[in-house]
Image 1 (tube, rainbow, N blue to C red):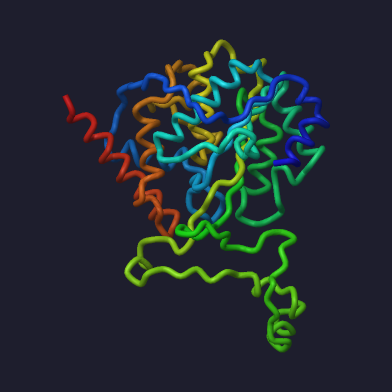
Image 2 (image 1 turned 90 degrees about the vertical axis):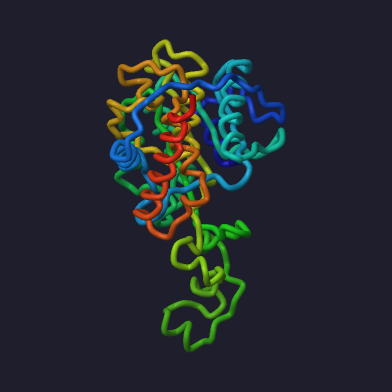
Length: 319
């Protein structure tokens, strides 16, 4: 994320406090809000909010998350980091050590749209790596840059081996390290010493899991959130931190209409949720459940909906 800090400096956004993840996480009270949980409603919700990269399954964080907050007073910044870290911990995720390289960055700005555009102009590779499938594509990115909204976010993900964490695709600038047969290379139109197929890793899976489980999984590796301080209104730190948790720990469609659902995603659309609701926590828990790792996008979405429905209805049966 060194490129991010360079871009922030060029945009004049590092003049105030920067806070990063700390090992001590403040445990805050759990917020419980009742919401509807019929199977049809759950499928509708998942279908509306889930926003994977085109042709890819929903991504998850699988390595350490290192949150950083820019342009906010240190105490408030740390409160947001603690709240996000606590939500991540509840999902079985962990936060990096102090000084870790930030991969979840929340930038506070007076003009969110201008800041997004300025950061992109300073370093286009900050948001897009020009690799198909690592983000939601050009159309979505244009909306990210141009929309007028209180909070905007952009995430990058990459296929990895679910067991080892090994990157399952060739990354930009990576040499293969494998020399192909010259005839094969000639047919592919590449150099024998630097051909894309030579960098394709071999991911082995147990025979019994091939039909349902994905040979590779989609892993989040960078999320940038920009908060427009002139547009967020009078939300408190807990509400904003929980909103950031929801959009940063899951790939959420910024244009999703969640009217009628009891979710923190309605924070800037007339509703005033106290924070993450039972509905939100159920969605995140279902997304990170083992069954959510499925081969196809539709199978994964169905698995998330099934786990979410089962968890929600089970919770309602408790006294």
